[in-house]
Length: 268
Image (cartoon, rainbow, N blue to C red; front, side, top):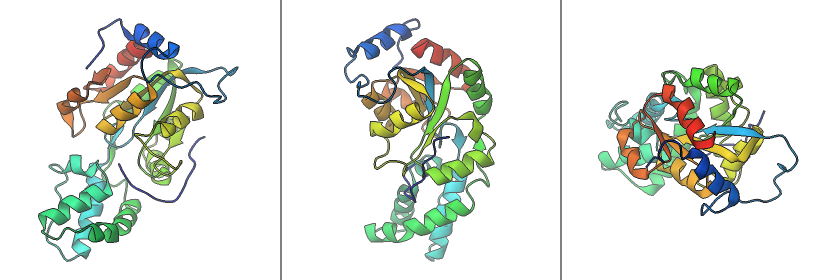
């Protein structure tokens, strides 16, 4: 989700089965084409662990209905009859605030870049005021993240939602303590698919870069993982559905119950 707000630092195509460790050796040795760089990132000499970083919107939680409600509130204030549908336009919602405004205004025949910019901040404010009314975690999300932690994996969040909003939402959903780091759209000067926020999330939760992966739902997450040279697991239960197969991620899950096995296959 592509929002922008005040800065907030929040730290506190499959391979075949059995190929996960070979893939990892390629990344670690730097022979995997785009593998993790080896700058002095403070990891040398520290005890690091395998690490799973999660996207938030459309991956851990279905936030689309609250996003659509915020956009529709803005259309009402504009005096338009146009509304987004919380089901049919769920995929639009997960593309972010400006995308929702663009689609709604285009359907109403009222689109202009200036109108999108004018109503972006009001949309943010409307969303921040009611970001947890309809939002729910996907079935099994909390349980499987906890299972990973019990198995010794570090876990963190890398989202294109503003960090303060992500912090508020995760706290409201009762799962903030499951994640050792939270990097949002405004934590750093760049956001996904730039690799810096991903590395910040890995480092922030004590993860080992060469033994990390990203779980997400979109081409943005796929591009981020590719830039980092790490595996990507995409979910098929988000609005994009089976279409994410075309992105050729290293792993796919149709249910959170499938996550631990995929993680073990890819990073051990």
